Image 1 (cartoon, rainbow, N blue to C red):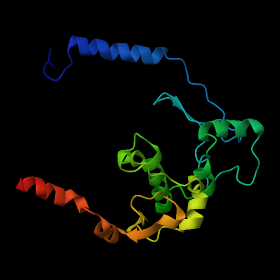
Image 2: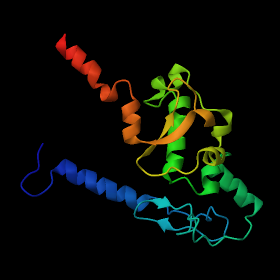
Image 3: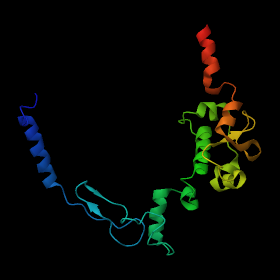
Image 4: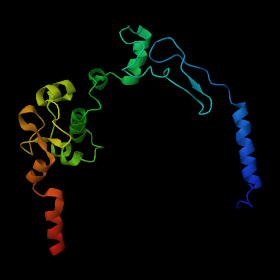
Length: 193
């Protein structure tokens, strides 16, 4: 079955009319209270068939209408259900910084078996010290990442991530420290065999 000229086939026309009929019979969407606890109703987008969780702008921390006011207990419980009990990135405001991303990547490499680098870190027994499970403590010990070119480095490659064993170094310095940078030594050895 193909498209006949510029028109639709009978089956395509039937599917289109069926979709339009379903669209007309859909129950209307009911607006919900804004999740921030301000008491206003969030927008309903009929075209996309969805109800927003927040009134526009209420979920941003900078221009939040509830800033400086206290949330009700009900609103606090609702917010906790969205953010979970670990809301450290929400509290400190560093979650989009390179320092936070380095910290988060470090935790993922050592603790998450689904992480692509886990076998090279957590799989080898490299761990993160208990103090550094909190970003604030990591920031206090290591300071802010000096530049985008800097990376978190362990002085002892077989040691754990802890204040005495870590530092910020540039990408070039880190590459120079590697036993086989980029794996080219191993590839060249395999080619000559």
